[in-house]
Length: 126
Image 1 (tube, rainbow, N blue to C red):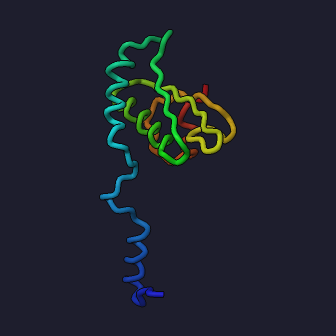
Image 2 (cartoon, one colour):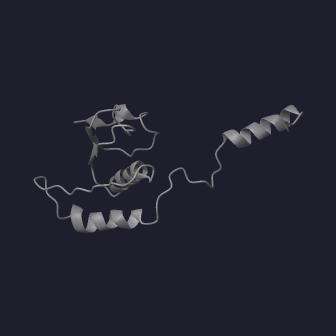
Image 3 (cartoon, helix red, strand yellow):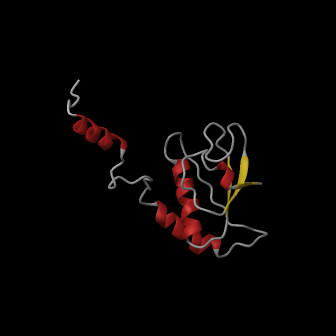
């Protein structure tokens, strides 16, 4: 193929492939998600209580970004000084935090920054 013959050029071409560009976002958020978070905080979260907690359901067809949306929502709420978020994981095939094939409730107190399954130990399973 078109591989550079000079070792320095080969190293540089490998570096371009292996190092992600800074301009590319790691998490792509739909433009509506921040307003959904703000609406949830303004209209649902402030009027909730331990007996009647605020609940947000994320649903949609396969491959539309439900897991990414949930990750965004959890991280956004935590960044707004919500001390903990309870996340009921019902995706049996490709769970974010729990083992496959199991419906799991998680208490999340720190942002979800790693790839799925790499941070299972950081969140409490209820």
